[in-house]
Image 1 (cartoon, rainbow, N blue to C red):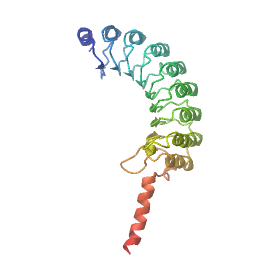
Image 2: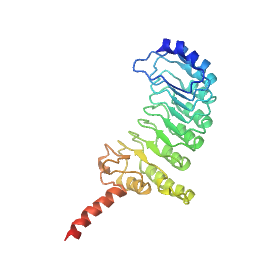
Image 3: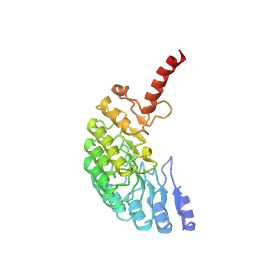
Image 4: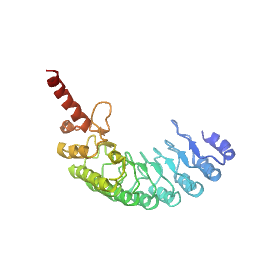
Length: 280
């Protein structure tokens, strides 16, 4: 892979998309430096699972690929938060960033830099990064108001404060993954439900009013949550479904939430009850 990139990339100077996902990590810094030297129009780059890359790669991208809009460095475990913060100061057009498993890179320091510099960010994956807390997420919420999808699965240090900040500031949020965030309580759920009321006032004249708000939420293993809070959330967002085949509200491992149902499931139950009576 590394030799292939070194030999071919200089011939593709107007390349806009480059996918270098690997099962066996072979890519090295000199390959990324070559990409940054020749592919100045690059908009999408996938370097996922490139365990051998170091901060030198991020520094090279910061100087050579200023038009990046989609960057996947998931599983690149050697990157530091300082290098990621440095990158954010240059690649300010970024809209999609995947940092899943980048434990050393995804810290409060880096998230504060991302919130300050990536004002157009729409999708961020921070899955299984447990070195940041509420301060980092609040920086994202304040600095990235257009955020549509955020994955916080396994981010053990975050609390209700993170979700409340997102609910109050990221009114376009469609997908939120809180899997195994066990410090999340009912306060967070009620805050999200209230955000939908706020959003409805702002989009009342929109023909797509019913589509506004969360369409996917994963609260699996969030065992502190209670049925009334989650039901209130479900009632506020018609696009959240618990019915078979349309699961967009994921509550696996929360045995106390089995009574929570979306509007579809309630209507189906009512129809099942009414039809036998009509038959008589």
